[in-house]
Image (cartoon, rainbow, N blue to C red; front, side, top):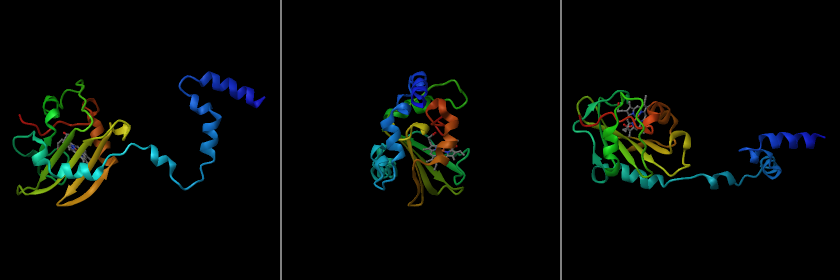
Length: 183
Ligand code: HEC
């Protein structure tokens, strides 16, 4: 009786929800008491050290996208900022008009942006780095890897919610704000 009404429900829900009705799947989820961290094997990861090394070496790896340091809107430790980016992405970055919410721009896997932060005296105090990982790395945040460097210390790296939560405002342009470009 219960089984047949479950089956009817499953049939009704079956489009796109097959896994929810798959008894094997349900059993496995229920029996998950092991400590071997099977879930992790499925996560899409990137080589963070390699990405960070490339990001720190921005001056030789990337193209300078701002002519001069510009006043930062929101990155609070910076009086002014300068943006660098992957050569292939430069044109698209420069085409972003932050005042036009209808624009649709996306960036490919491997794209990198680095923002230099300067204090009021013009001394460099740190960097922020965005690197587009492979599909599935963090789909809620368009697969961007985020890092923040102060001095020589990496203070944040990986799927950093506080970065992506704010950059989400630029969802039409793939979480890239596009400010700080040459005018
Ligand atoms: C409160 C909102 C906010 C937060 C939090 C934030 N950003 Fe940004 N980000 C911006 C804005 C606005 C710009 C445009 C330039 C500026 O104003 O400095 C920007 C620009 C950038 C850029 C240049 C590329 C682009 O999108 O134009 C990078 C790289 C970047 N941020 C990385 C980060 C990282 C890494 C973090 C977290 C450590 C972070 N941001 C946190 C708002 C934010």
